[in-house]
Length: 322
Image (cartoon, rainbow, N blue to C red):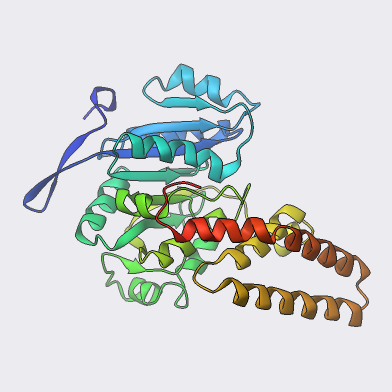
């Protein structure tokens, strides 16, 4: 079926029962020219029709102009500022809810799908409605192996049984996972209605971990579907790259305190103990730079406790967006 002839709604045969569904794909872009052709062409070539929304975060490399000129069927939303991953996606998620989409597929700008990726994901979700989020397997940029981080997510501690079944060649339809990053998420409408959008308390990074914590609180399962794939041409980061990144480290602390699967008092107690232990280590091993950095972060977190508590209270409720 030619994607230009679609009206965003597709009748697809699941087993013997026809099923009417609407899929919205959301891509947040920022200076993504090197990937945008592969990303959007792959979605347009999908065996399941999908309405594509691109939210551009004020790119300076011509990405939005290129999309406008070469992808007329893509709905392009130009942000007047760089909103980051979470806030940018929230624009598309709100629109998908308002337009009564049955599924929302989040895809990174540096990733692309196979023709049957959406077909397999929606099929599995129909057969397993307890899963709020489903992810395909993530291949590396060359497509010749698992993406490094995904290989960690597929491990036995995070996704029991997956690697073992891969090795013996007896894959199940879906595997329950504790976490998989948001490079390629199929979110059901029911999950989106309960859990809502990403929390704007995280400007960039950690918003997907927070989202999964909230899914677990609302009894929405996370699953990996190993029989379908994406290619994810991501950059790998080491601890050295993020060690002194103030915003990212602050996000990690916010994440610990905002986990609504534990009480707020318990989260605060764990945070304070961890910070005390870290500071003690820095003093004993004479690391003044690390000590100063850690103390500065601790103060900033404590100054934001009320904001974090408010965010926790909101996300405990069945509220679509913060």
